[in-house]
Image (cartoon, rainbow, N blue to C red; front, side, top):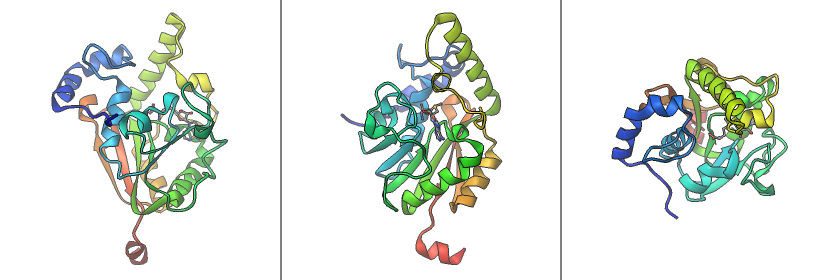
Length: 225
Ligand SMILES: C[S@@+](CC[C@H](N)C(=O)[O-])C[C@H]1O[C@@H](n2cnc3c(N)ncnc32)[C@H](O)[C@@H]1O
């Protein structure tokens, strides 16, 4: 199956309908509209360099399966529906891969779920398993959007007895946060050794969500630092 990508026409429709989709917690693609997860996966997939490790992949390992055509590995610490034993690890502090295995490592909507005291160590581990000259991608919503969506999801689950709040399902640790500031993301990326850090906004989510890209230096770049 070919990896999914949104067309220009789909992006225009998604742009126009964003407020309605955001406020109704549109969680599956339907009526010709993309859900919020499809949007973030589509933006990230366009920046993936090759064989990818998706940390905190969530239910169904959707990003690697549908958006990278299976070219990667999705890992999580919680046995969500649609994951197998090969997707589950006890933590992200010592990943079961040799150095320089991947062309991209992604943290999609989840670096805030790494306990504060482990965030740097998780990024260092991501750095270790990346090949030289390759990239890490982190997505993070805007502060208000993040808080509002979490509150709306919790309310929706209570009223309609659904389980859309996958973080509630897992149970959030006291050291997790709902949101990370851009400055913290950049600082932690730099501390882990990444360079040339840049940010791209998601236009079809009215720039309320964005991704950060950092690069593992080539040997020549490391010497120059
Ligand atoms: C909001 S969900 C995002 C899931 C998926 N990446 C997506 O974009 O739909 C947060 C994910 O972070 C995972 N997670 C839990 N602990 C984590 C940690 N220490 N580091 C990174 N991710 C973690 C959760 O299990 C969950 O799958």
